[in-house]
Image 1 (cartoon, rainbow, N blue to C red):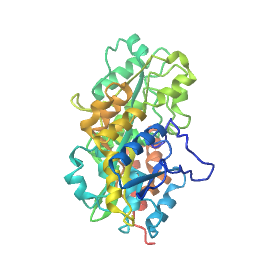
Image 2: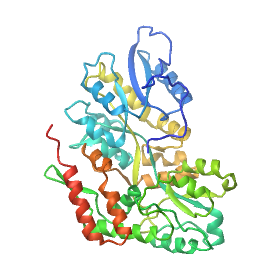
Image 3: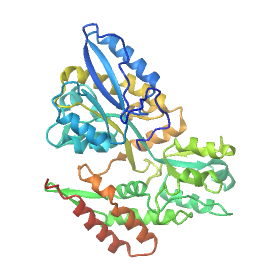
Length: 419
């Protein structure tokens, strides 16, 4: 979820790119070093933000350095362990990465600012929850993105479907109508576990549960099994490969061939589709993943970024000022409009209402979630038993038996490291 379609101009040839200072001489100001990730914000946005921030904070100067996602984990860990001199004061991290950085007490606790000044009650849950540890807020939501249903408006019209479905049952019924005449009702790869996660959460299930500080896989609960059963029924209304995920082959390319009515993806995929098949321009639409009832969209996995402040920052107040400005309503909505993101608060969704794909994302993000909030979750994604479980069920194996096996494997992977 952290890959972006737009690239910043200021990228060096080094392994980790870094933009130089975006303003002139220091002029006696205190420098605040900010690490932001490549493609998270346009160069124009960064220049506008820097000019405004330095105008309103006469004693501070921003040094924004752009980092590559590849290899960023070890670099952040090193910065958090260092003495603070010349290190970053603010760092953008993936929302699900906060858990691995908070270990060892190396992040600044921003709970008081969150509760007092930053309106944390309105934050998008899929960004806010991963930023917490033991009820303390360390990661401050910045922007979000999540999956929606990308569909062919012309195929819907031909099938007599007047409006996008709002419930799961309506979705199944519509997809059955679309799965005719050589077309696939939906292209849903068998190992798209992010989409499955939303169905499990809607049923009241979890991927894993924490009990007495220990995590256990939970795919074998009745609720989680209901989520898998819905996935099975939906996936059968197309020809998605049961033994591969949505990137193998890339589903944008499959959709572009013109025989697919729907996919579940971030709205930005529409650009890739139209590039491969210009005839589909103006034929694509978006709607939130339907929920169990019409009064709320389905749950979705939320990706995006949080901002953290290292505990070893040289100036806590200055770092907090940068975080407050970047995540405040003015600049957060500006970023959302500029980059087609979901703003960090549900109350700011109207800022992107004019962009259909982003508006559909924002509706889903209000009910978004993230992966289990533990640093060990990375081990699950590295050797993913959820994918294998899905393939076996779609191939006809007993769901309960395979869910139990996958849950046991997740429990093993989530055991705390002894190192």
